[in-house]
Amino acid sequence: MKRFLILVVFIIGAFVAFSEQLYIFNGFSILTGEVAFEKGRAVIEVPYGAQVQPETFSVFGVPESTTINFVPGDSVESLYERNLGRPVKFVYEDGRVERLEVVSPLPVFRNSYGEIIVNPKGYPVFSDEFSPNARFLLNSQDSFSGHSSFAYQVRNNSWTTRYSLSLKDFSLTGLMIVHLEMETNENVTLVSSNPGYGYATRDMAAKMVNESYSVSPTTSDAETRLYEISVPLKRGTNYIAFLSELFSGDKRLVFRASRGRSNFTGVEIDVYLNEVPIDLPSGVMEVWSESVYLGSAGIGNIAKGESVVLQSIARSIEVSGRKTTVTTLGDSKYRYYKNTYYVRNLSEETVTVEIEDYLGQNAEQFHLNCEDCDFDYIKETGMWTYTVSVDPGEVAEVEVEYRVRYSN
Image 1 (cartoon, rainbow, N blue to C red):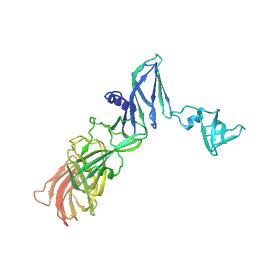
Image 2: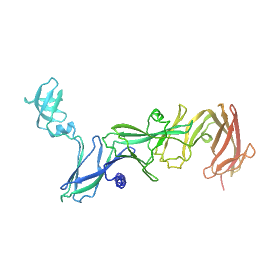
Image 3: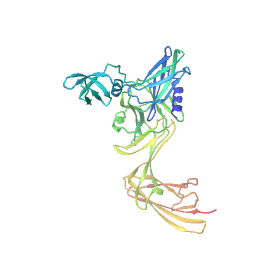
Image 4: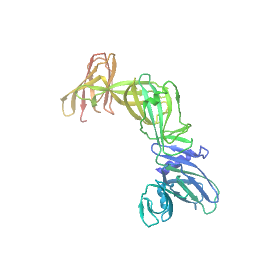
């Protein structure tokens, strides 16, 4: 899988003039670039802070005889290890200076009297060269000179998207949250494929609510989106506001009776965004009513023109429902049911509630306690739906009788 991803990024990278490019997925990243060989040798320096997976390294356009060695970046421990058995200058906290032999990288030293000193207070002074960056060393036996492209995977970078949706006017703001633990240049591309979840504060997105702007992907297909980042990124967590627009949407109250109990429970709140005007990368969408947080849901990549359905975001505290069922045994082929649904409205305005219930895939002979009642029943799923309007302070009662066939 890792090799497959790197090959895919190589294909993508062909369009970026072979400059060094960082592709950040959800939970890892891939760095691509070009290296120049001189007399059969080339060095690829890894950015500081990158946690490299050397086994994912790939290189194209080099002779078959090329050898590849990965050299980790220097650390205090590696300096000790290189100087085992050698005397080094050691400066004590009180200013004294002494030559001590390195016995172990713990650190453990031996003084001129042969005494063992463990972790003395102070610091050693090494004369070695120090390179904190890891490196890939490439050597070709036939003195190859030219350019080759490379890629490798890095573990410690990730990004996600956080949206804030206001039900007042269906304004949607979005933040790209990029976490970097390595130094990089401005050539960063965010890859949105599988849904990824993350968290951010709503206030940061709300600051941009009066402006209108968006970022569209540079490349898009059914599975993957690429977003090129033009602003410089720093090590740590970066917040990029990329979306602030008004959308066409709808809030629906749904009493899912198949999940309900015999007592009154709040009806569920569903949110719909109709035919979104731009592509949306996968992420988490928070839903707000004025300053009240209702809930959140994850979304996958949404293409322009598609609709977004956020089901069961929250439960209403003013509109509730309950269900009762009476079962009558018939013969060996049928069983008869009477469901009664009660929808109570404690708000100050008339509300429309969609009743949804699972009646089974063999339900038939429906009868409602009203004339010309329109309802939907989908035999393939066994779901029955009916829409009822309830005035303030009222309780609407819907009664449906039906039978279920248990044999052919």
